[in-house]
Amino acid sequence: MNDTPALVVDSVSHSFGALGVLEGVSLAVPRGSITAVLGPSGGGKTTLLRAVAGFETPSEGTVRIAGNVVVHDGRSLVPPERRGVTIVPQEGALFPHLSVFDNIAFGLKKRRGSDAEKRVRHLLDVIELGDLADARPSSLSGGMQQRVALARALAPSPALVLLDEPFTALDATLRQTVRDEVVATLRREGETALWVTHDQQEALSVADQVAVLLDGRLVQVADPVTLYREPATKQVAQFVGDAVVLRGTVDHDGVHALCDTGRVTLSRPAVAGPTDIVIRPEQIEISANSVDPNSPSCDGVVCSTRFFGHDGIVDVRLASGFVVSVRVHATLLPAVGECVDVRVNGPVLAFA
Image 1: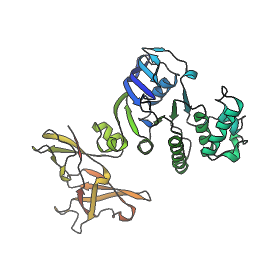
Image 2 (image 1 turned 120 degrees about the vertical axis):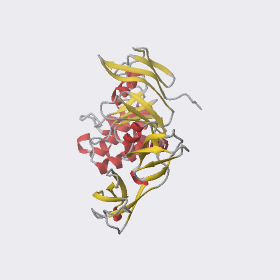
Image 3 (image 1 turned 180 degrees about the horizontal axis):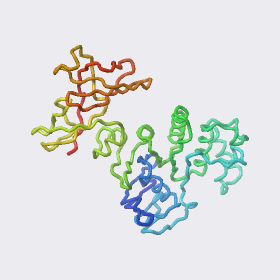
Image 4 (image 1 turned 90 degrees about the vertical axis):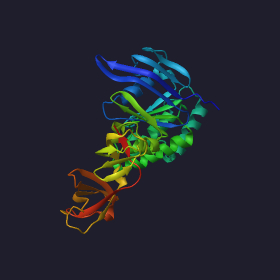
């Protein structure tokens, strides 16, 4: 078994003139895995992808693909077409004058006729579009076009597949369906993928590891569960999922703290003293309290609610005046103005 990572990015930096875009980025992508690069718009995600693909040459650092050095210290050593990398772009970008079959076969010019046809037929079966081999892209739905774009990227059996926010043009429901299909195909074919996205839920749901890129710096690389539950910084905690941030004080025992919701347990030891407490909305539990909202025994008062169908967000004004957001089941939305008891379940995070 080859344990060499499919991709290694080592201390890569890049700038456009005086504007720094990437700063000392290092990342390893294991073979057969999906790595999501997660960050806001303008954070350097696409520049990193372009540097790996060969469309941009970073100012500093080294890039290795399948063990081969393709970039070193500001020099591109291997052109894009020889890197063994393929791309699934944002909107599919199929050739409108070619059939579905010919779009998939486009990157197989070096294969002999029968081998190329066998590969294309296999991928048509994988994406379940075998009956549409002769169709033109204009006759396909957006989801179908994305599946064809993926098959075209997989056809040459690349060392690495790059996905550049591939579902932004699809509506929410179709995006989730197509995303699930694409992930299933990548898993089934044993492909290695680098998936660029600004969508936190997408990154957490598709990837084996998530690399958080903020302001050109890679601030944390971890599996989705660890990233969400044990973010390295408050900035990561606030970016990856919703977060309630309260000022608090860590006890001398280092494992408890006092904040506006009461005494809480910390997920890891912290230094005694002032701190920021980070709580996930789903950790906060509220229950009706029949006392007068102005009573000292009232933990909080509901000031607004938002209904999302499957669940809802309740904004509760605590006795201190601070407003916290609480995620609740859709059937449990309280009325605005109602007094509620507030309880925090499970350990929380503290950042000095």
